[in-house]
Image (tube, rainbow, N blue to C red; front, side, top):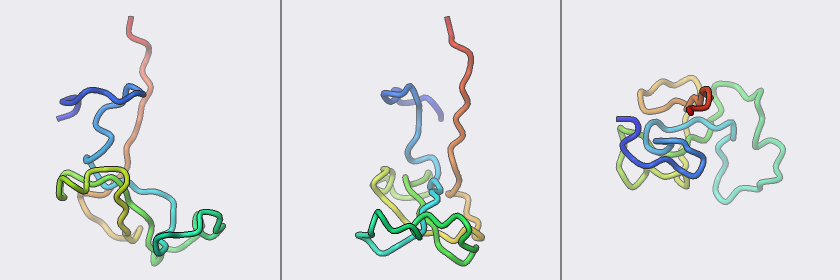
Length: 93
């Protein structure tokens, strides 16, 4: 359930453990070279694995943290992978 825990320093709730969150980074062996320009190749095809982070409701509790990274193919489908959408609402007075 959303909002069961306190918000983080940015006022956001439940940012970890909901779904494995897509990143645009291509999966490379760790440790990787952060200056490698191919690491963020947005034109890479569906056969190139991308990094997903953060754990999901479907996985083990110890994997629900932003430091955990796994790989997934963009063409694949799994209910535990997605992205967070943040909407800014009007200020509450």
